[in-house]
Length: 479
Image (cartoon, rainbow, N blue to C red; front, side, top):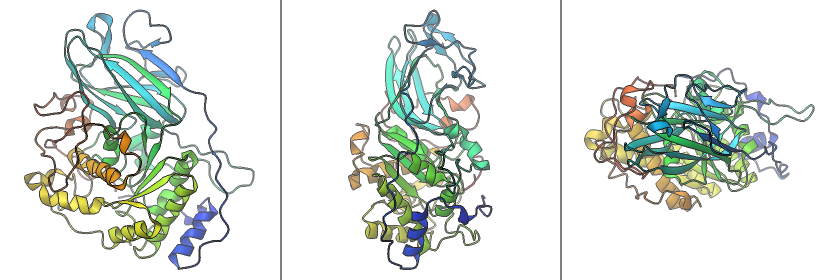
């Protein structure tokens, strides 16, 4: 478990938040002086247009050829991450491997369209693409023998750096990362990482282009939302991108152990706000840690301070022209059976009340998760890895709940949902017998992580409709 006692609430860096918190918590009138309109905190970087070729021989005009032994360094600005076992394949036309490998390119923070081309002249291939720390972008896309397939996805890159403060201004200029950020370090690395997972990779090219106008879906929350790289628990936050077409980016800023208070005090909210632009979204899911009365510096009561802090997040997002969205935390489940605990006391209801009071969209994942637990039958124990954190199967089901919430609330993101997404009914969760997502997110970089394509698994980049049993779990992770 992660404790936040080292974080002093005295170091908040924006006065409007303090005014809103105490005003909302104690029934005081809202401040009459409007806060200053925030300026674009990060200067716009020069547009990025990078093209990498993964074949033998001279590269095409405008492309950089990547040789198999090209290891990433900041000085070079591109290359494979350590551990990649790749070779030239298909008579010099591709780079291939039977183990997952990662390729990175140095880019400034922001949103990027990534176009990948792949396919073997003689062998059918099935390839999954992830970005940063395990965000699922393309799931088991098939390329028939002799065909070259091209796909594009949009992803977000960030660093811990915050804009430089004016002289004598109070505050810090960097997010306070902690030991849990090591579990998704690539989210903060200031480079764009693409992971290729295939039993027979046939990578031909990767193109990276700036997408400054793409709306960003910022996620704020705890370990049940964060990117979880290479473990037995997989959050809905890292699976959400696979349900979106190119043109919208998911920036998963959630982290293990966070609460509404600590997320702010570590400047994670500041980081989001410094990048936020009109047309963006802020999805907020807290409760698991906020409700811990034995964490005195970060505990908030559901009827008062929990609601007050949520209203701060809402106000700050609206101030920047973004759309706030509240997500009630999924219920915990009983270990071994998956039965719902019907816990979280008054926190889900408090969030519903805030949504009504502030006229904010609400996705009631708490209620939907209980319905899934109760309807999954023999698959119920496979939804959660340890009673709190979801498996890949559970994270996928929860991500589908979020997508349904987007549609039902008419958030404006509906046009970015992949065309073949089928409406999801929590009373009829997917079977856990067909998809086999678990191996794509297991520990290690090989073996069962690759897998083949189950007989009923979706292909050609379509959205999957079923899930398979999850294998061995490493046990509970940090909250």
